Image 1: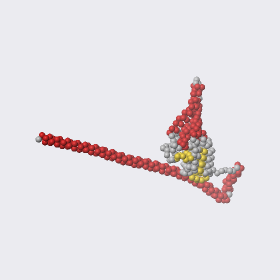
Image 2: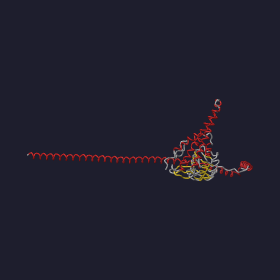
Image 3: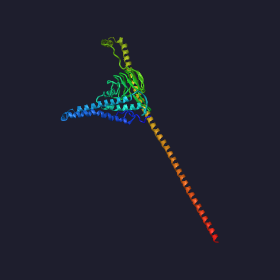
Image 4: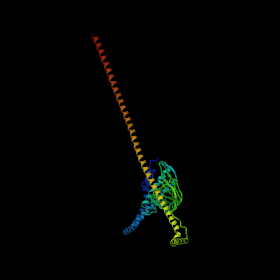
Length: 400
């Protein structure tokens, strides 16, 4: 398993979702340096052309600043696309499930591709001159998207992405063509049909296929490889089919038929005043019909609100469960550290006890050695005294 961990979805060129190698971030310096070359060339050219006309330079300075800014912006995207195509020639991007290991080529090159695209997308999203710059960058990076489906307010992966014409993507939507799990990297194409609607703060998982005119409610999340049927409303986490996506009644009448219908409605409005007794039953029935239709619409409205509140409640419950799991994980971590420290303290005590025993044993051997030396010395002295006494006694005997 990789030692790296996924980061948040915050914007910024410093990191990608995960990094197989920190050295990849040096690519940002290369992209910025290459993008500044045409800006520097244009600046020096302008200074040499209008060296003596400082007033003219001061007048065109705002236009010049915007031109430099626009050239830098386009250069960042184009140079990033060139580097990305070069990397793709070395290792072709492909879909699948790959081990999250720095030694795996698909995981490593996916991380490299994400790093290359991170800075230009950050520039488009934060300092781009126009709202369609995100779509322009995604098109340059090889995605099938249209300018009629802007992704300015969403977090969208920049590969293996198909978005149909007229699709509406809500604020804070996360569309993932790649996902990091504990041990694996999942890369799968996301296909979104025409005129689809994705509600705010929804999450589209890798491999999701959304049909034409489909609607995904706010705060919903799809499963990996989930198929969303056309002309249906999906809501919840995971997203489930709710009902048909029919919010408008089609008016298929011609102009002549519409005029006749209008005349009929005018005549019908006058009938209760001419013959009130004859048409009182029909009027009451029509009022009841209108009331029932109104109540049905109100019921549908309340049902949608109930689904939204239920989704919010589930989201809050998941957050609280996540917090509890996180606290439990921290508690388990501290317990593990305490047990580890206890074990280490026991090992240290045992080591100290062994050292003390060894020291005592050494001292005992040393003392025993000293005692043996003293005993040998005493025996030697006794022998020497005995020898001298014997010698003296023999001398005295000899003298006698």
